Amino acid sequence: MSRTEKPVDVVLVGFGWTSSVMAMELAKEGLEVLVLERGKDRDTVPDFAYPKMADELTYGVRYKLMSRPADNTVTVRHNSKQTAVPYRHLGSFLPGDGVGGAGSHWNGHSWRPQAQELRLRSYVEENFGKKIIPDDMTIQDFGVSYDDLEPHFDFFEKIMGVSGKAGNLNGEIQKGGNPFEAPRKSEYPLPPLGRTLNDNMFTEAAEKMGLNPFPMPAANASEAYTNPYGMQLAPCNFCGFCERYGCINYSKASPHTCVNGALKRKSNFSYRTECDVLKVELDSEGKVATGVTYFDKKAGEKVFQPAKLVILGAYAYHNVRLMLLSGIGKPYDPESNTGTVGRNYAYQMTGGNTLFFKDKEFNPFVGTGANSTSALDYGIEQIDFAKEGFIGGSVLNAAMYNGQPIRSMKLPAGSPNWGSGWKKAVKEYYGHSMTIASHGSNMSYRDCYLSLDPTYKDDYGQPLLRMTFDWKDNDIRMTQFMKGKIDAISESMNPDVYKSSFKKPGVHYDVKPYQTTHNVGGSPMGTDPKTSAVNPYLQSWDVHNVFVMGASVFPQNIQFNPTVLVGGLTLWAAKAIREQYLKNPGPLVKA
Image (cartoon, rainbow, N blue to C red; front, top):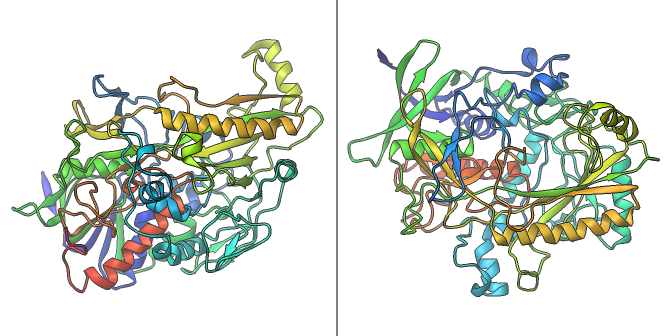
């Protein structure tokens, strides 16, 4: 049994950050806009209302806001000679579920990329020569410049109400901010969050070592704020329930708090939940999308939704899978190095030290998702790649996010895992530690990619997405470099003891421990259709009325949380659709 719905101008797949912002921008143009979301409807009230979110076991440990592997997942392998197996238990990354997506449960780290990250291959070749790029490394330029995106970064920061301190205003370095950021036209919408003990201790130590610490830009409101869409945010109360939780206080930026309340008031906007999009339907020549087919879980039937414009705004690898299932673009083949859909999958390289001080009371339960002091002295633009022997960079963060006792019980190496010895260690060290972490880039490689799995299928009989990925020597050298820098800072602070957690040479990617939910690539953007799936405006090279939003368009991963770059690219694409595509539908860039 199936049905066909009334045609709309625009259908968007997924209802997280990208679709919320894109839907708002296109609805303002008077277009009939529809969003389809596979998960359930969610909003601050009733879903995140206190005391529901203050439940670490339900949300922090059992992942109630996450997409369950039993409903949709990927298969994983390290190389093409292995048989991939399903990711059956959430660990390494945590895709969101329901309205808001991962934008509901993120921390709020709100970074712009450094300018050269957007033209990485050109930057490396111009400054260090082609020979330092490993033969299997497939990094490329984004095809859009920082100057192109700056106005959109600015507007997205205003949508989110980011708290921070500018470090470079119109080319003039500002005291107290990040001196290594690219020039910005205006100050952050809100001043930085209040500082806690870890911030002060790291600032003192970093400055003594000649570094340039500054408050992490945070999508946690430091003051009451009303954004350009008329949505109101309340000051953060440092409750310590950000990451893996919806905000109880309207203080953390999310699609719910920053966009959806205003969007839902528009008569030309609508959304449907519990709708699994199965395929983008194409015309007989495969050159124009006619709409999408989805399964309505409430009605128990397939539905065809006609639309003039299809925008993929689901989680990064879901967008790639939908392109592969729909025949949009040529699937990537690592053997011949041809095709683009699935190409350049990348992740994030992280590591850090935990420092223990018996005489310091950090009160970790007083925290926010982006309560951190950071330093970018070892960023991509600050490192001599030829000298150090790697391509990449990292921001250093000294953070205090929460004091949740189940998953944030930091203990020194060698502490017992249970029993009276464990209890003694908890009593001695809970609240007496802080971290200094590296959040680094991850380059793309010829044999790290996404494809359809030949064995495993979902409930609809469609192939699961297969992830082929492993750590490479270049990125291991980068994180070991950061370890040396963080070790030096740690030792200068004279802790009673500290322990390190960095990936070592020879280690393989492990899906079990949580690392980050920053999966990128698979539909990379660029100026060459031979190496990119979408053009610089995020438009499919092959099907002109399909646009792809989100981190799947990154040709490699930057050294930061991707959200601000994702938001800036979404607004950049929205502008191109409004000002160019709607007036003359067709390719915006000649192949």
